[in-house]
Image 1 (cartoon, rainbow, N blue to C red):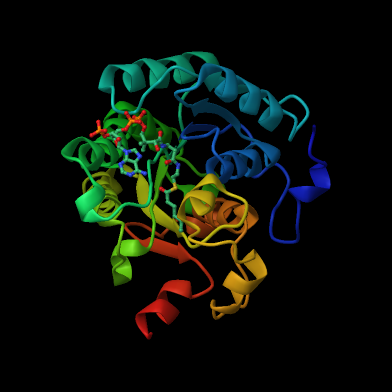
Image 2 (image 1 turned 45 degrees about the vertical axis):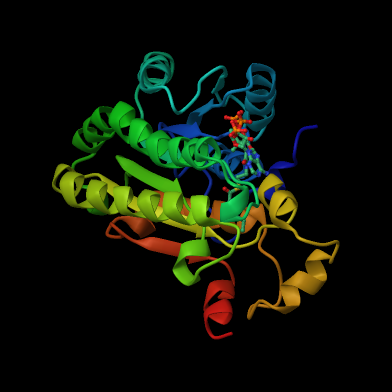
Length: 284
Ligand code: HXC
């Protein structure tokens, strides 16, 4: 069902700020990344979302396209981020059909709750390959387009345009430590550091690279997998200094910030969007 346009616009979002921009989003059919993509599309961008499941990816792409009249959103299903060539092909298709790639969200991830004793080598490797190799493969496939985008917009501070931006979606488990998440802590710490390398190596080419780390986001597949009991999101929110669970809108807002002019000089950073949840967990 089409989501009302008013849902995307707020005092901090300006209509049309991403007009003419193209976003390439792995994991784009998932709850968090689809909300990020929807925000970019509502504010003027076109997009390609990448996923393994063909039907789901195409269905979510069609739904995201309703965020703005005239929006083009391609669903590229059947693409596994563990396959480097599949990502090269997807990036080319996105650039051919939409005219380039200006924004990348490396959001494809795998997670399940398991103790080390319950993890086979293949289980550990699977999460490492989806998260770490998937992020690396996404960077490799898209970075030439981001450099081109930055060339088209050499001075975003003064001409009002943005381009050549990449973010990875991480998790906060390794900022404090978490049982049952050895595989994800290993994977997401690598993801964070891949983005630091991109910032250092491609900053001189006009590309910015950052990490967005969601806290517990209500209504997502990740939360469903991780929730250990039937406690309500209201109860879980009480343990968070900001007093509530996160929403997909919170992550979309952070993404709009980083890809907008307001984020021009933010590079090589980790933006944790969790109401200070991980800080509270650190202080016990
Ligand atoms: C132990 C498990 C397991 C579990 C799977 N495996 N689930 N081991 N406990 N609960 C093992 C399998 O037995 C197998 O090992 C190996 O993992 C690979 O499983 P496959 O099903 O063959 O892999 P695949 O089809 O590639 O699926 C990958 C997946 C799956 C990660 C296992 O869950 C998936 O596709 N996830 C994508 C969606 C997702 O996870 N979204 C949540 C992201 S949220 P053996 O030895 O048997 O061969 C997130 C952060 C949330 O990342 C943060 C919230 C605060």
